[in-house]
Length: 467
Image (cartoon, rainbow, N blue to C red; front, side, top):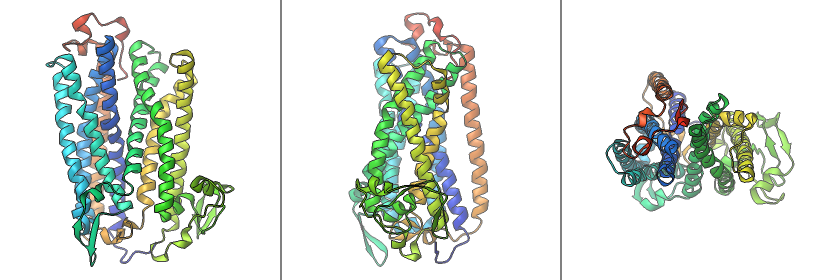
C-alpha cells in the first residue's frame, strides 16, 4: 500500500479508532435488541400474569440503563475522534458526512428520554402506559444505529454530493443518508444486534442453568433471549449473503481482499484460511470454483482480482490477509451459531420445551462470546476492507489523518480510560447480579403492578441471580 506522505500519526490514529469503535460496537446491540427483549418480558408479564417475566423486565431495565450510560460515553468519544484524528475527512466532507450523525443525535436524545421515563415509571405509572413508554427505546436505538451505518455506508459507496476541485459545493441529504450501501448494511447490522444481544443474554442464563438454577425465572430469561437470537440468525445469514453479492458488484477491491483473489479470472476458488505473502496465497485450502459460484451462482462468474486495482491504491498483503481471515472467522462463527439455533428450534418444535442436554447448554453458554467475535470481525471486514480509502474513490486515509503530533499519547490515555470504564461496567453488573441473588424477588416488591401487587412471589424466584 502506498501512502503519499506516510504521516507518522497514521498508525496510532487508526489503532485508536479501531479500539474505540471495537469497544463501542459491543454496546450497540443492547440499545437496539436488549431493550426489545425487556419489553417482550414486560408484555408477557402483563398479558399472562407472569411474575418471573415482570421481574426479568424490571432487572433488565436496570442493566439497560447501565449499558446506555456506557454507550453514551464511548459513542461521544468516537464523535470527538472524527474531528481530532481525521480532520481531512471532516474538513472536506463534513457537510455530507456529518448529516447522518446529526440525525443520530436526535435519536440518541429520544432514547435517553424514554429510557429515563421507563425506569422511573416502574413505581409511578399504570401497567400499560408504563409498557408503552418503553416502546420508543428500541425504536430510537434502531434509528440511531441506522444513522451511524448510513455514515459508514456513504464512506463505502459515496453519493449525494457535487464536487468542484475536490470541494463539496452541493449536498443532497436523502442521497447521502440512503446511499447505495445503506439498506443492506443497515439490515445486516440490525439483525446482528438481535443475534448478539440474544446470544449474550442467553449465555448468561445457560451458565446459570448449568450450575443448577433451573427454576422458571432462569428458563424464562433463556427462552426470551435465545429465541430472539435463533429467529434472527437465519435471517442474518441470508442478508449477509445479499450484502456479500452487493460488495462483489460495487466494491471490487474489498471483495478481492475478502476472497484473497490475486488475479482476475473465472472459476475462482473459495480459499479457506491462508495468508497473502508477496502477492501469493499460501497455506489456504481452496474449494474449486467456490468464490465464482457464491458470487454469481455459476462457475464462469468473473471476479476482478487485486491485479485490476491500480498499484497506487492496491491494498497491501497484510491488509488483504486481515480482511480475508476476519471474513472467514465471521462466516464460520455465523454458521456455528446457525447450527446451534437449529438445534434449539428442532427441540422446541418437537417437544415444546427447552433443550435439557448439558452439551447444548455448554454450547449456549459460549454462544455470546462467539457472536461478539463475529460482530467484531464483520466490522473489520467493512472498515479495513476499504483501505487505503477513507471515502472510496474520493479521499485516501493518509490524506484524512491529522498531522498534529502526540497521537500515541492520546491513544494511551484513551486506552486507560476505556479499560477503567469496561472494568467498572463489569463490576457494576456483577454487583447487581449478586444483590439479586441475595434478595430473590424482593427488589421488585415496590412495582405497582408487579408480583407482590397481585400475589406473593412464587418460590421459583428464589435464588434468581443470573440477570
